[in-house]
Length: 189
Ligand SMILES: Cc1cc2nc3c(=O)[nH]c(=O)nc-3n(C[C@H](O)[C@H](O)[C@H](O)COP(=O)(O)O)c2cc1C
Image (tube, rainbow, N blue to C red; front, side):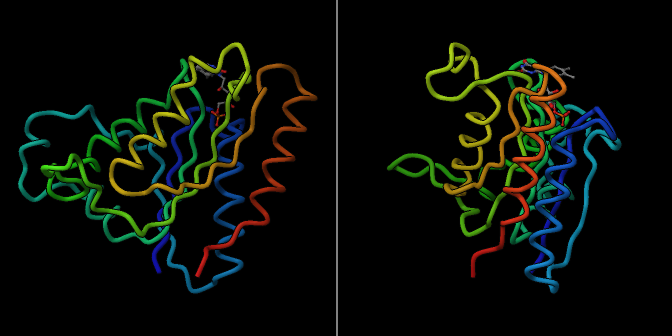
């Protein structure tokens, strides 16, 4: 099985989502050493904004081919300005392709990429859970669930680290809790 590991944080070694996505990959590969891992750093090698040329290319993109060939995908993302990093959005712009990963039917849209297992390491400066005052402006987890669901991936596993900007102690605890959760993950048979 192939595992695609994506990171999108711009914060380098200070990134929480990078630490957690790496821990998820470590845990999954420990449980299944036969996993073939490929890695894309979407911040270090940023994809340009989507253009008409890219959209109209009948061959698709290397990013689409890599996504389609992957069985497991691990995504590292921080919340930036209430949503995902634009580098990760540029990647999704190449993966949501009509006729390849979704199609419209008389009954509505249908995802064509179900069956992949997706893990998301999502790090947020504040708190956006149900009942929190800022819950209504959470557009990172909600966006990711929407686009993944649109292509047929309806059961992504989120490992959240929240309150990262509150202070060093909250950050340490949130990171430790997320790393502990990541350590228990395996790819279901
Ligand atoms: C450019 C930028 C924008 C941010 N915007 C938000 C935000 O809208 N809401 C929030 O709760 N935290 C925000 N934060 C804090 C990040 O969500 C937090 O630092 C998180 O750990 C980022 O993930 P990373 O450490 O993997 O980069 C922002 C941080 C940066 C650098």
